[in-house]
Length: 165
Image (cartoon, helix red, strand yellow):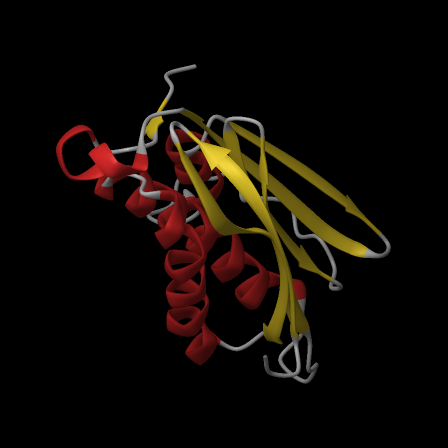
């Protein structure tokens, strides 16, 4: 395990299979655009043991990418070296991701623009999005529910599949 990583493992039962899956991960990266691909890769890696369908993985990776991109672009000034934290954990029938920055909140633009759809994308790709901002920074909490299926059936049924809200 490298510096910047905190991982706790716990055996959990999914369907009929007892697995040793990551239940909690806490990681941080420099708030730099070149880190976005590394963050997307880390989120995909964390979700891999859960045998989610390809669409569910892509949806959650996109939602996290939007939250991280917003933090990279808006939270810190051009002369500031900030960090982005990701907390990823499982709950009963849900995957949760929290994106945290220690910068300053900037309200979304109200005018017509070709940009500024990141929060809408997060809402569309997850079951719930909560955004909290204060003097300490911004926290974006996203939750994606799934129904329990057998991991051994993942190739035909998608394993854990999203639940419509």
